[in-house]
Image (tube, rainbow, N blue to C red):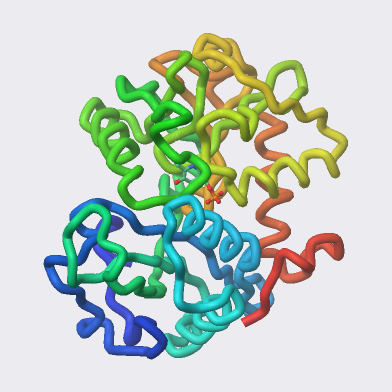
Length: 313
Ligand SMILES: Cc1ncc(COP(=O)(O)O)c(C=O)c1O
C-alpha cells in the first residue's frame, strides 16, 4: 500500500446502477451534497481469511444503517437494500478484491442549490479500495495515544448522531486534525454535558475491575456495528458489560481503554491525555476481545456462532 492517506485506484466504481471506470466516477462541482453535506455513507470491510476465502463483515447491518441514515437525512435512495447489497458484492468482484474497504454513499446530485431543493436527483455510488489498519498495525498491537478534543460532539437536537451523514464529519475532522497536530493519534469527543461520547471515527470502551463499559446508545454516538459485535462477543466470553455514561476522569483511572470501528477494528489505547492507561501495555481483557473479533473476521475456521455476520464473496 502507498501513503496511508492516498487511495490506490482500482478499476471500477458503481455509480447510479452501473460500473464505470474509476477515473470516470466524477460529479459536477454544483453537486448539492458537496455544498451542504446532506449525504449518507457507510464503511464496510471485506476480510480475506486465513484459508484464502473472503467475506464481508455484517453487510446487512451496514446497509440497514445506511437506510437509517437516509431516513434521518430525508434522502430517498432510488434502490432497495437488496440492490445496494448486491451492488457492493458486484463492485468487489469486478475489482477482484480479496480484502477491501467498501464505501457506499447516497447523495444529492446537481440541478439545484437551494437548501430545500427537492428536485435534485438522489444518487448512489459504491467504491472499494485497499485500506489497512486505520490507526496503524503498530497501533493494533501496542495501542495508540489519544487526546480529548476541544471540540464537543453535537448536542442531541442539532447533530443527528445516529446518522452516518457527511456534513457531520466536519466535527470529527476538526477534532482529529487538532489532536494529530498536537502529536496524538486519535481524538476523543465529549458530549455537551461533558460525558465521553466517542472518538472521531470509533466508539470508546473502557475496562474497570473486569467490567467492560461503553457509553449507551442514548448518548450522541454512532451505533457502531463493531461496538455491537464487541458487546455480543464480550457477553459470550462471560464478561460483564455496562452501557452507561462516564466522564473523562474515569478514562484516566480505567484499567484498559480501546476503540472499535470498521476502519480501526479493535485498537487499544495506551495513553489518554498524557496519562498512561493501566501499565501502558495492551490489557488482558482488550487482548481477549480483540482476539475474539479477529477470529470471527479472519480465522480460517470462523466460530460456528457468527456465520450470520459473514457474507461470502
Ligand atoms: C463517529 C463514528 N463513531 C463510531 C464509528 C464506528 O462504527 P462502526 O463500528 O459501525 O464502523 C464510526 C465509524 O463508522 C464513526 O465514524
